Image 1 (tube, rainbow, N blue to C red):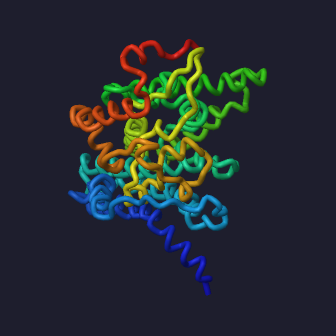
Image 2 (cartoon, rainbow, N blue to C red):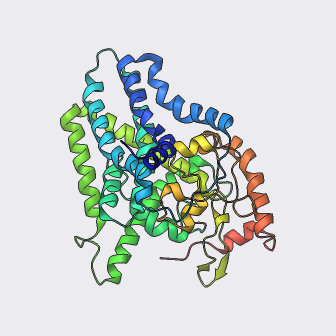
Image 3 (cartoon, rainbow, N blue to C red):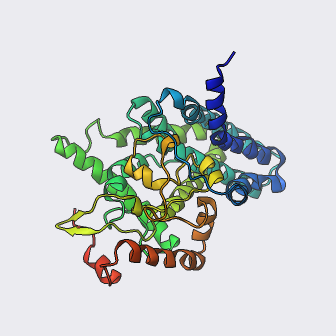
Length: 377
């Protein structure tokens, strides 16, 4: 008989297991075709937005003295997802190209749903895993990223984003008035370059060349090559094309969330290339209950930057006077980001209010940002 304490912990963790529902939704579209192929998209963006409206906010904070053992049912979902995603992704790569009941457009849309799954859940879970200190979880995070051909995200996130967030040296921090369609190609280019430079610099500090075997880029390339080869073997050229397509959708999902998380927020420059410490005020937060279940508390983003290795159930909520709050959860905010005029109408007044609240001494932000361009590297 399961102890009552374990049952209670499982019941508390179960809402975060809702992400697993994306797997049967993707398969429903693949098996039935037609409008069913839109189910994963509708669930991720629209259903969770509706649930946020109904269920409201969760402002409660977990006890920080909770041990890893007590978090078992939270941790296990991120570990189980890795084999589940692998098996389902490659099963779909085998099934969909030869599915006679699916037209070309339906097959493309099925793999839009796959990309929503591997991006919204897979990359998000890899983000949780890469921040842990043990090699097992970090390797699992690498495997998830290789399935979307974005392995360098680990280096970029840990060695660049967390160090330079809120400054012009961080490619992922969206500038004020920078629309998503300008941000996206910039971040694709700059994040790869900055990640490689960060690893090269790390090795140079140890007196090693960039091509030393300890450079994780070798692992990144090997894992990505393995995934591409598997897609080709299992699904042929059509399967390979669908694999690359879902990866592009997943990357889009990641970067539009990155765009939302820090849009227009700037750390104060202290001179001589130094910036103030990262504070809760430098990330946009959303306390919406349902979307935090889907995104395993990613929307408690300020606390993640304060304590990057803190596991997702323990991430803390901040009040509005400490950290800026989004009016809606990430699903709705990312949809707004895809329509730049709507995004600017919603967010630019909030950025201006944030500036007045936290940095009233800076009167001319255009001149301030121009003066604090990234230093040469």
